[in-house]
Amino acid sequence: MVKIQFESGPTVSVPYGTTILQAATENNVNLDSFCGGTCSCSTCRVEILSGAKNLSKRKPNEEAVLGPQRCENGDRLSCQTQVQGDVIVRIPDYF
Image 1 (tube, one colour):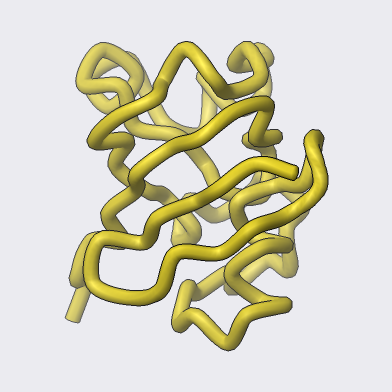
Image 2: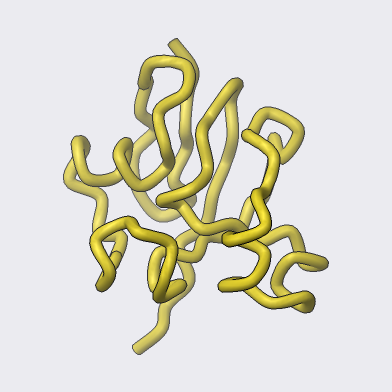
């Protein structure tokens, strides 16, 4: 089990390899995903505050959706990001 701490919400324990979006959905954390987790809309973007090394590597389709600046900032799409160790994430306010 690994821990995901949502900055403005709970800390949850999930199995290794769970995506951040799956963890949020299963634990009633408000994290939008307009495309349903298909890596096409970027509404599930999160900021990684700690533990970036504990995440799966970013794939080309995630890089394309995020764009170079967001990738450089270390942002991730929660639907594509598997947790492999403890992390702290921030869910940005869009509206």
